Amino acid sequence: MQHFEIVGGNRLKGKVPISGAKNAALPIMAASILVEGETVLRNVPDLADVRQMQVLLSRLGVKSHRDADGAMHLTVEDEMNAHAEYELVSKMRASVCVMGPLLAKRKRAQVSMPGGCAIGARPIDLHIRGLQALGADFELVNGDVLLRAKKLKGAEIFLGGPFGSSVTATANVMMAASLGQGKTVIESAACEPEIVDLANFLNACGARITGHGTPEVTIEGVTSLTGTEHTVIADRIEAGTFMVAAAITNGDLELVGARISHMRAVVDQLRRIGVIIERGETGVSVSSARRLEPVEITTQPYPGFPTDLQAQVMTMLCLADGNSVVTEKIFPDRFMHVPELNRMGAHLRKEGPTVIIEGVKRLVGAPVMASDLRASAALILAGLVAKGTTHISRAYHIDRGYERIEEKLAAVGAKIRRVDD
View (cartoon, rainbow, N blue to C red):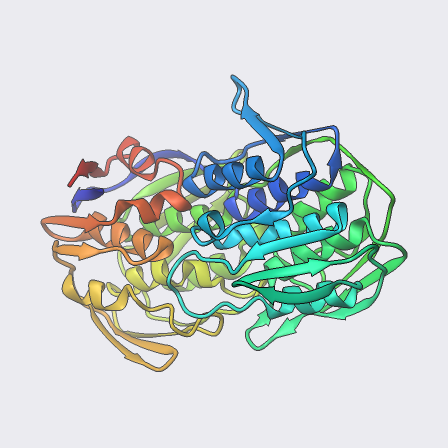
């Protein structure tokens, strides 16, 4: 195992390239199962989850490789296997995205119940319900979801859940319906930019999808999809994380490739806190006022404030001049970073799905443990500004969603290094 060692107190300044969005790349990679011919994807980040998806797809007969320019090439070579096994799926929740493509193209999908970060229950009942509405038969076999359908037929499908729309369920149903017969209408569809990117990819392959980016998505089924080239959108969560890094260190960063249009709720809240954000020719420039204002934040489905930035912004609010309130409406148990931040001198109090944050003058370095991907990012941010040295164990969590984060931070002035335990 490895851990991060961070010496805090350094102001960040310079340019940071924002990588492609993991949450867009993974379902698009899964969609290659649907495609005849070669799929070429550009701006796919080099992450543990991406490599894991490549392994899963190889088991499902999809050959993939990167060329010298970093573009990923995917081609279906064998359509016999439709079983995504526990050994692979348990390591990454996004593996469930193969369910819809397998069912549509191979008439059968057997997918183990998914794993991923320990941030609370994330059931897949909406996925199953949506695919059943298209005509699939469902049963649970030895812990696997087994779906069968000789043909999928268009339907009107409602995908609203107890915590809002499901991004991966929307992706699964949209991919499956692309090769279904007739018209499918998804009501309460997820509106995230990653869903829009997936729909744009499918349309480039020959699908007929409209309304993507709104709560009502319409899919007119086609008989086949053909390979294409596609560039994955920039990662709005990575961009938001580096916005916080600039603000918390009183720094000045240019985030190359970041798109304000994908993160308006985040930009609005950061500006309320005192972060200066300006659109530039190649991305977004971020700096900070000396004083950070307290705010109240509630996570919501897109276009609301994203749950994937809750932990990072909470870290910044630990240093705000006053009391802040953060309420988690997507994953109410996503607060495993709270006790670790308290170890560094923060004053956080959890009350159900809400955390009360009493601003302090400073954080102090300490040994802490990363519990999930975004908590890891939050602790790195805390280490950047803490007095002294911070050691963050379980560095592997961050590699699931951030491409070489320690190198990007070090290039703009952070004292951070990855160390073997």
